[in-house]
Length: 359
Image 1 (spheres, rainbow, N blue to C red):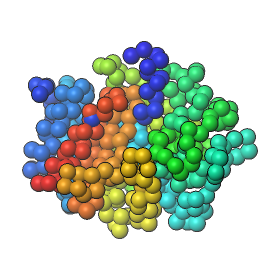
Image 2 (cartoon, rainbow, N blue to C red):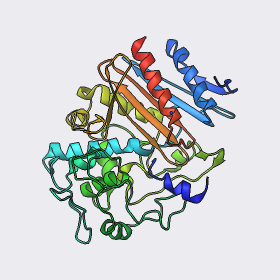
Image 3 (tube, rainbow, N blue to C red):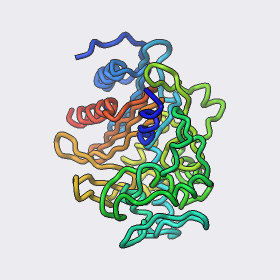
C-alpha cells in the first residue's frame, strides 16, 4: 500500500478452503458454533484470531492461528475504536456526577479554538454521537505523519494549530459523520492532557479491566500479538493527544468479556447508571436512519431485535464487539491484521451473534 493511500485510511481506526490451524478451545456446544468463525477469520487473512462469547451465564473463549501457538483470552491486541465506548462511559460518569451535562458546549483551554456552527456550539452529546460536524481528522494531522503510525507525532500544540484550520462539515447535531477528532476532543474536554489516566481511573479500574490501557506493561508485552498488514509485521499505533478515540489502547478478550458482561447486566456493575446512559438512544441520522447511543451504534439482528455494537482497528489489528442485551448474548473478536473499509471480520461477529441468538 503506498504512503498516500495508507494515510488516507488513518481514520479506520468483515467458498474459500479452510486453512490449517492450531486452535485452543474448550466449552462444549459453543465450541462447535464458534470454530467455523475462527476458520473463516483465518481464511480471510488473519494470522491469528480469538473469539469470546457470553451466552447467559456461560462464557467461552477460543483462539486459532495460521502457525505457532493460538491466542487466548489473555493475549493482548490493540483495541482501536471500541475504546470510544470507554470514553463515552467516562462522559456518562461525569454527567451522573453533575460535573457536566450532555448539552454542555465543548470547551478547551485558552489557545484551542473550537470550531462552531452557524446556529449553535458543539456539545458533548454531539461529540459522543458523531454528530458534531467535525471531520474525521484534524486538518494538519497527516502532513508529517509516519504512514504506519499516523498519530504518533501529533502534539497538543499541533492540535491547537489544527483546530484553527478545521472547519465543520455540517451543523452540530444535524448529521452523522464518524469522527476520531470528535472523540479525541471529548477525551480532552473531560481530562485535558490526562485522558489515558482518566479512562483508567473512571472506567477500566472499576470494571477490573486491568489489561485495557494505553500503557503496555512488561507482562502485557510478553503476551501481545504482533500486528500485521498485508502479511508484514507493522508497529503499534501511539497517540498522546486523540487517544479518547481509542487509537492507542490495548486490551484482551478476557477484559472485553468483563466489559460486555457489564453491558449485558449493568445492575451488577459499579458503573450501572453510566452504562445505562450510554445505551440509551441519543441521536438518529436523518439521512440514513442510523441510531446511536453514546459511543455505541445500534443495528438489527435478523429477527428484528436490537444489536448494540462497535468495531475498531489500527494498521495491525481489527476488533469488533456486539451484543443483544435482551437475549443476554455477546460476541467479541480480535485479529492481528488490518482490515480495510470492507471490514470482513465484523461480518463474522454479527453473523455469530445472530446464530447464537437464534439457536
